[in-house]
Length: 323
Image (cartoon, rainbow, N blue to C red):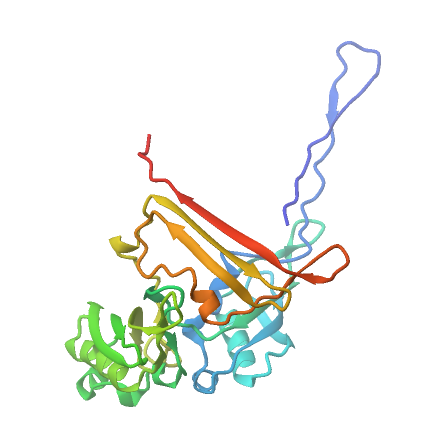
């Protein structure tokens, strides 16, 4: 909330050309509520996901209310809306109390005072982001394998308290198995790098990517392992976190036009799927939705009666020089 303070000048009308001007004192600055410093979205992230909730695949939203002291720090946190998980609720307050900082509330005289602040944190298990595959990339099945335990650490790395982040790329077969693992960015520790691929190859499970016709196809994902020893720079192990991929040149848009049309029947079924394109689109099969027996919510007329409608989708891509 932004408060604007206006300086008002009162001019005395005494009839004397040389009369003085009396300037009113500005109103006192006040702020009834504390104002967050920085982005509240950084107070708790997927990196902080409680290991128990992650293993049981629990998600939810924790609403909370904070008491913020005159120093801008959180003195108390109360859960006002439970996520349904004691672990998620407790982690919410733990991280917010540790990380949140505020511009404190101000009283009528502009003096810092105690205030209240309320918000919510949505806990959602991170999903692996597909790199190459359309319309659907590989989907991670379960998350227990993504949890790094102290027992996963190579003995020497654990003894020397070595930590690091390993970025990897996984090749997923058409049956959802991890077929290969490549190190994209090393942790600078060969044993942690090797262990990351070992865990992914032996434990990770995926639903395969799907091509235009809905058939399973090979795909790739990029992700990272964040190796942290409990009590050394963190309070708990971290899950695998998705890394937004850089698409290859084959995925760059190409100039051309594409037209796809189909009929959405009164029962929601798709018929007469057809199309044409001047672009080089791998696997372009406009009849795939009809072959896959896809259904949509049907269109309705002015009397709310379900009716058939033809849908025509036209796409035109132009590639221009930057001026």
